[in-house]
Length: 277
Image 1 (tube, rainbow, N blue to C red):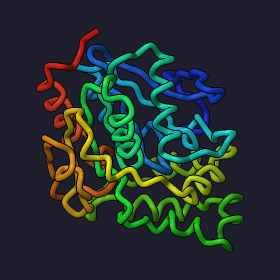
Image 2: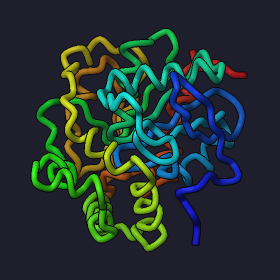
Image 3: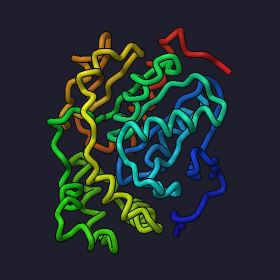
Image 4: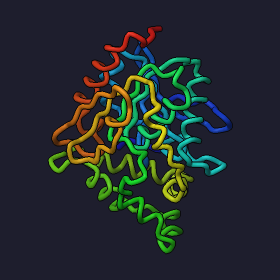
């Protein structure tokens, strides 16, 4: 059985703003940053990253509060703090220009990066992204907002609850949720500090920047599943393209890695502004 709570042979670490960030990097070509969602980790993009690394320099961090990066000392889990950390992380690695693709929370961070640093981004891919205030909060996150359950969830996150959450986030015909996937999510959630970080994240009041989304100038591709609320990114981002998967769930990069990687690669190759290294 894999021990997900420990570094893997291809794990790398870098200190950014006092936080030891875990990441993986593979491939060659234009830089492409992949950002996972909440209660997840960089392994969310394992299969897609393998495919994309044939054409791109693929960089995947564990976001603060998750995976082997772990919690922030300041407990600041606002999206602007995430975006600033990711920007500083890439500057520390010496990557001045990059495309970024994010799923869910990762997509929210990605479009905030596009607003904050348009001069750095060569492309933006939003996969079932979040960021509009009317977006429904998932059941698992709502539980952490219950003042009676909150202290308990800081101490224990049952494996069964994690499995139910994973199954609720994939398409109805998906078979990807197996023991290995549940073991990975359970081990990483139960690393020291990660449970409390998740509770803190879920109870953070996020600033609403959705009114600024139409100001995004980075070439944008929106990937979403048909049964997932597409929000309004395609409508609001000038020139944004959209592809809809007919059967996928919220975890589209894990459910359909070939479809996602093909869409990202085709989109980024079409951008003449993407630099090569």
